[in-house]
Length: 178
Figure 1 (cartoon, rainbow, N blue to C red):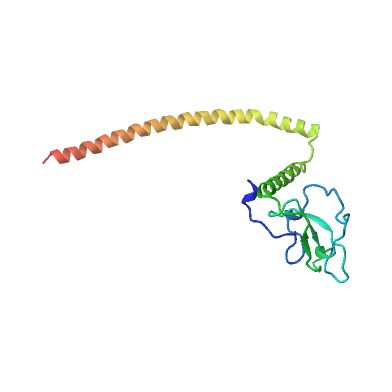
Figure 2 (spheres, one colour; figure 1 turned 135 degrees about the vertical axis):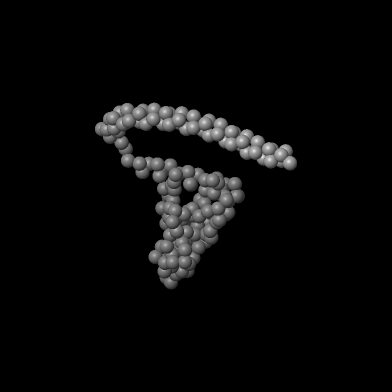
């Protein structure tokens, strides 16, 4: 599913409480630069004024777009300062970055599967080998029952045909008897 079909959120990554929102807050790639390693410094509106870290937005509306945010915003007691560093991206690139982000997270989710040992594989194989004759017996029984059902269905269709002919004959006899 393309991420362009989803609703977008405002700049930044925090709700009213200042806490991060679900997966939109996680960066799908490591930061290439420390959020405080930039010049000239941008100051938030706190008292005393402090250098605002430069973050990367992963919101649906602004994926990959960098912005400055109050250093205390993570605690929920910041001044609310947010300022964009990058200009808005064209919709095509925004959708592309969003889709790539989702794919990175999907692939990382597959890495959470623990490796399987040779002993575990052999144990599963042994269990399969011991169950295989039972499965074959059940398959044979299923084939027999399917053949029985097909025969009964054929007999049922014959009985229905005979009943219909009988009813049709009775109705025709009543109509022509007068």
